[in-house]
Image (cartoon, rainbow, N blue to C red):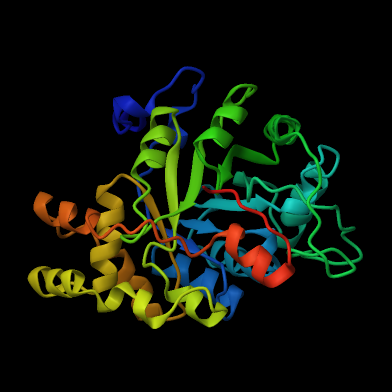
Length: 332
């Protein structure tokens, strides 16, 4: 079986029966966060060769994303089974009775019968906001306040499992979870998470978390693989954070005859992670997929590893207090 042969031994773990979820022919993923035109972006991404699309309720553009996906299918560019569509459960819908409602809303907006993967977006449970009152609810309730509520995330996970049972999603996973959050879910999981999605780039290498997740049988998808670029306009990063200006990466760009983005994405692939990239440029979409005609030498991978600063841009422990007045750390 070719699929099972592609799975590295350390990915297999007790309780992981569907190894096909861990075997990925093409690891490159197109992300829908903060894209200019979600319909065109999704359509052009698929047309350019992407087969993995990363969406979320919170991105506020699932209707456009769905139109782009369905357009590509209608035109015969792909079949539905060729695609791997991920979306995510938002923080306000962690109560078990709200999980299927949130799933159904995403499916409705995407115009799909099922998704391939549904992730808990953050290990943060917030006050429920009615769908008809505010959608997506983002980080605040109807009074404009961020309200954390007591919730057993294990019960949320059990509700996620029911979505697999009913065919709404093929796989379930987690996002922005740390090692202890993962242990908690694994302690009760009937259906184990097949995926962990985390921020990861040369300034935040996450070596221990990635190893822990893989040894628990999860593949690891990484967002912001190019660093702080998308966070500058949100005042969550500065020009000094930009990896595109890094002397080592510029040196490697010259050495390999590739763009700096291609060097960083190739680094992510060689670490056996699945990088999520995004762009509105069709030319860049093609460039960001041209990663398989070169290989970073071991010493160059290690040199990029050494750029780690444990610098996190997407940190609720920072932006929730600054933007909503609520201190909400999930990382030490």
